[in-house]
Image 1: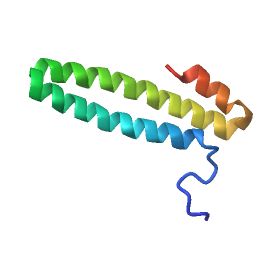
Image 2: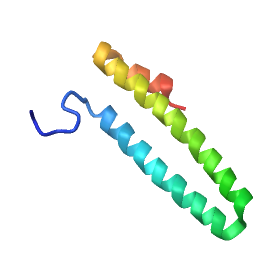
Image 3: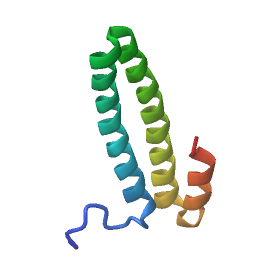
Image 4: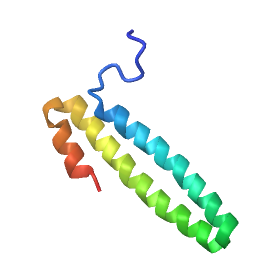
Length: 84
């Protein structure tokens, strides 16, 4: 075992996981800020918008992961097609 989290990753998977994690943290921060500044409606709006972006990012991650495992030469193509 190489000690790497993603031993077969070409780099895209790591980038997408980092983007997904950072997006989740920023969504939580935006929700808390919206709640503090403008109230519940703004907080719910921030949560919904951030959640939509996170779902699209997760779909992109899954498509790239599958492409990387099944047909590594098509991983970049899958990333470009899946990117919102």
